Image (cartoon, rainbow, N blue to C red; front, top):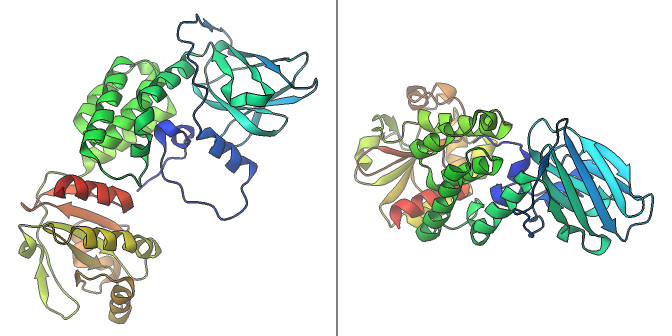
Amino acid sequence: MKRISFVFLLMPIFAMAQKSKTSNPTKKDKIAAQAKKTPPTKSTNDVAVEKTVNGFTINGLFTGFADGTTVNLLNPQTGATELQTTIKNNQFILKGVMPYTDLRVLVFNNQPPYLNLFLDNHSITVSGDKQNIEAAIIIGSPSHNDFLTFNRLTASYQDIFSESADYDSLRFDNVGTICYNYATHHSTSLMGTVALLRYFQVSEDVNKSEQVYNAMSPELKSHPLSTYITSQLSEAKNVPVGQPMQDFTQADTAGKPVSLSSFKGKFILIDFWASWCGPCRRENPNVVKAFNTYRDKNFTILGVSLDKAKHSWIDAIQMDGLNWTQVSDLGFWNNAVAVQFGIRSIPQNYLIDPEGKIVGVNLRGAALQKKLARLLR
């Protein structure tokens, strides 16, 4: 599955799984981690904002810092300093131009804690104290105000947006409704785009998501986040969900022919993998977990291996505990079933319902667990 390296994905409103680092955290890592924290909770929606002609102005008023304390404006995605100034008489000013609304981080004296803000081309006032930087009040950024509002609406559902979250139909439906309503009523706000991504994440409803996206403003559609949305919707539309899976037959480890059609009446995951495929072997524990959890609920798995050496194939099956039917013609990338379905990378999988129709494609880890929980609850 493709992952997007985008600032919004670091935040609680759009958190996605990241592999933990075992090395010492770099400055960039620390900034990204800080960006996952919820920004100040004080709303300023009733304060008039002033859009600047040539960019943004950040007027800072912070007590507790000595004159000469540095203030950096950082891009949390790159870790780069974009602007720098110093505090004098508890005040500082930063001026610049944002090509589009984005998350930025204020860093005082080159050390945490950091202050996160959504920055657009407006005149913004940031006020606070050295002892409680994260509680600073941000006035003048419409995008930041929108973020605070949306974050409050979804605060009790943040765990749902983690890939490790358990599936709960009522909570999924509730937060899906919140995100859908917010997106439809904020067609000119960047947070409307974030809400749409959240809605698509929990609902998987391509048609409704596309309708909301099409109603968004042209300016919003030029934002990088919108590019990601279109790619996700396009990818989902190209997946043959709802279509019947073509039948195939291939020999199992004992040389006995096995047909997909022989599993009709069950939910079946067709899992394309190989012993030599590192990502496949790392994913296998998740597949084993799914099998063990749902094997007694009308679910099974059919493994299709792109191996070329039988002993390696058999050894991997035993080593990884893949206790379900496995087939292969040992044709490597020319495996007849892989060629039939245009498989050019692995791992890949198709989830088939008892009627033989495709109900999911390329479900990994917790995504597979969630999908099965929905279908087999």
